[in-house]
Image (tube, rainbow, N blue to C red):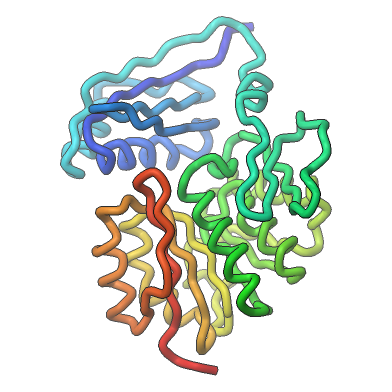
Length: 294
């Protein structure tokens, strides 16, 4: 049996790398995983497709996406790796990680969780979110901090990916959580992780294209977790305002430090004001609140 395919792209400019990674990720039926590694002058994007993807037209598309974001695609290759259990090795490459009160680990982990922590089992698979990325870590820290301040009753995780934030919210808040994602593969993975964490009846995962989806359309979420990207966050600011209950709180992530102004400008225009920011390795997590009070 032939080994796994791998695409390696090197891009100058973080925003260009994000655009390339997003383009690969949107091929939901083909891309099994991706990650971005910051290097001194370039970013490296790795993707693991189920079938060959690269052709001249697709390479040009990626180059244009990187250039449109102010970056430059410097190289891209597609190669067939030696026959190995890449999924198993990928899982083992993610050691357990403690983030605030949360202890995120893969299914291969057999040790006990540290005393006083909330264990979350997440495997590196076909959906984004293992807890290692600074954006995910920022969201988990924000969630842990917010849970100390008040009791939330109607949490929503938009763009749930692997389901890690929805699972964390359900365990930390002891509430049912609604989770949505536009990617059907992410929905499948998030449901699987909810079951593995004993939350099949607590975390409700559905395919939904943002707040306007009929399945998510309501106006009384008091906590929204949105770990997406800067541009979609800014575009959905008005929809977020409509979805939030009076005095509601939203945790926004997936943006670089220099993209804060763009995201905050869009949300301030809707009366959502910055309460706190968490910056980890150049990635920002913003906590915004509705100006209205219950």
